[in-house]
Image (cartoon, rainbow, N blue to C red; front, side, top):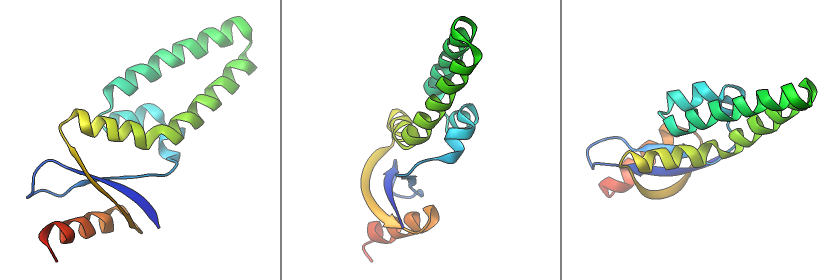
Length: 118
């Protein structure tokens, strides 16, 4: 079971749900995760960080650059839900609630049933 944050804009559309857990997808492919979830500022930040990691690798050795990259990827994996919540708020979504569900689609269904008053 996972804790989900629920965001929506209008009553008649399905809400966006964000799981509050480590994201392997974001840790392994940060730029793809950012582009898929329309987190353009995070994508720009990742590119700038990678330029910094490249400079660290150039000046201090490739091994240090590798370990800095690994630590940044782990950090992105942990912070992916927070980045996604910020992106949703920036696009006009409103935080509604948190709920526990087994899967994202079930979290959406639970929220829609609660919203309908059932």
